[in-house]
Length: 464
Image (cartoon, rainbow, N blue to C red; front, side, top):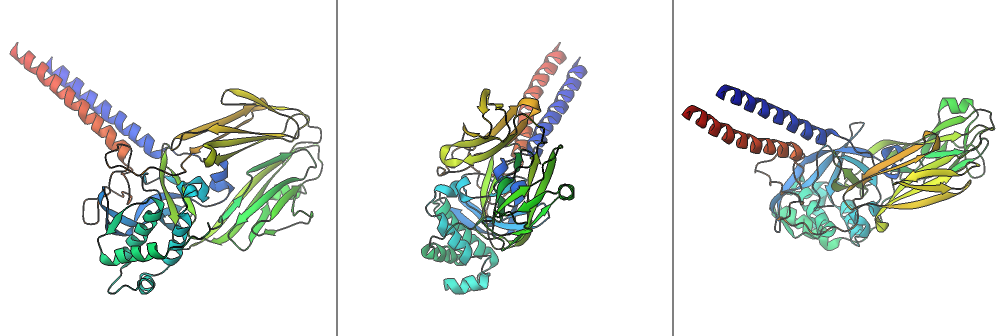
C-alpha cells in the first residue's frame, strides 16, 4: 500500500511539472498583434527585445538601490541590432517582447513636457557622440569609458522621462548625466521612418482609390505595384493623375484601375532606405500580452524599410456594401477608434462588441472602444458574407505613477554590475523567465504538501 502511494506521488509530481512548464512556455512564446496603425506591415520598424547590451554601468536609484543603466538591444527581422534607452522605468522590460516604432503620443512621452529634452540628450550624448567626444563636450577630466558614457546618458534620460533621483557609481558617468541635464533643451519629435496612413483600400470598379499619405524620414521612397496588378492596367498616380514611381515625405498617392466585369486586386509596396533618426519611440508588447518597457532609439542606423497597402475594386456588376475597417489608438481618449467605411451602394451592417451598427453607402462611422491602461485589448468587427477584421494590442501611454519597491506590480531591481544576473535580464526590470519561475514555485509548494501527506500516511501504515 505504501508503494502505491509513493508511485502516485511521483506521478502527481511529474504531471505538475509538465503542466507548469507548458503554461510557462506558452506565456513565453505566444505572440501579440498590434493594431493596424502601429504594425510594421503598415510602416515603421518592428523588432524584438534581446535584453540589455554589454554597454551598461552601475548606478544607484533612490529607494531601489544598485542597478545597471545603459543600452538595450532590439533586433529587427533582418538581424539588425538597434541600440535603445529606457523611457519607462515603472514597466518591466521582458526579453522576447515584440516592439513597434510609434509616435510619442502613443507612449508616456506624449504627455511629458520634457520629452523634447530627451531628444536633445540623444543628439548630444552616447552613442551619437563617441565617449571621447562626449568627454570633451562635458569637460570631464580623466577617462570616460563607453559604459560610463552610456550609464550617464541613461540617468539623464530617466531624469526627464520618469523623474528618478539617481547617482552613478563612476564619477565620470555622473559628470555626463549632470552635463546633459543642465544643458538639455526642448527639441521636436523626429519624423517616422516610413509610415502609410492606410493598410487597405476598397471601391467600385473604375474608382480612384486613396489617398495614401507617405510619412518618411528618407529623402525619397520607391513605389511599386505587384506584377498581376500591372497586367490589369492598375496604376499609381499623384493628385494630378500622373504616374509616379517615387515619393517623398508628405506625398499623397492614388490608385486607378479600368472598369472591369471582374474584381481587381493590387498591392502597393513603398520602400525606403532610411537613416534611422534617434529619438523615435518603440512600444513593446510582452509574450502573452501586457506592456514591456517603452524604449527610445539611440544613435543612427541605416535600414531598408517597406510598407504595403492592399486594394480591391469590386466588379462592375457588383451590388452591395464595400466595407473597410481601420483601428487607431487614441491615448487622450483612453481607447481605440474603430472607423468603418462603405464604398458600396447598399448599407454595411457590422457587429462590434456585441452591438450592431450601420454605415450608409458612401459614408463612414467612427466608434471609440474604451481600453484599460496597460491591459491587452482585443477588438473584432464582423459583417455579412464572412467579413471579419480584428486588432489587438496594449494601450500603454500617458503619464505613469512613480514605481514603489513595495508594490507587487513594479519591476524588481536588476542587480548592478558585479552582482548576480538572471540570464539576459534587461537592465531595468524583472526577468522574462518570471512565468516559468512562478510555475516551478507552485510545483514546489504542491510537492511539499504532497510529501508531508504521504510521509504521515506512510508513518500510520508502518505503525499498523
